[in-house]
Figure 1 (cartoon, rainbow, N blue to C red):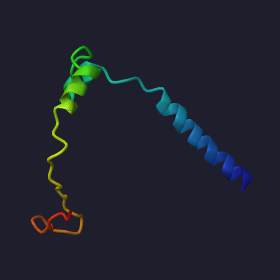
Figure 2: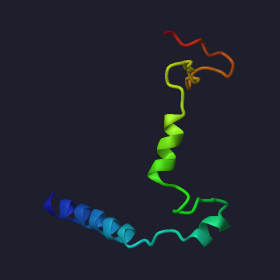
Figure 3: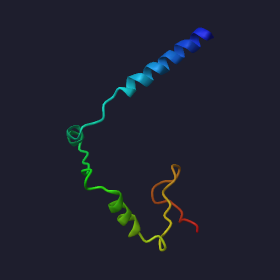
Figure 4: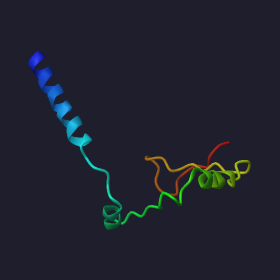
Length: 80
């Protein structure tokens, strides 16, 4: 039992260090896969706050997504 526990911990430790050494993805690699990101200068806390501030939170409609067991178009309306 002790030997099996030691072996299991060794495998988990190896995984931890194996994936901790990964480098972040460069913008060139992201473009290669079709992911576009904004520049750091374009996204600021103030600009995001202005976007959130403009959202109307007093008048909204509750929309329920389909459940896994429901077929498409079979959803029941949300109850308030």
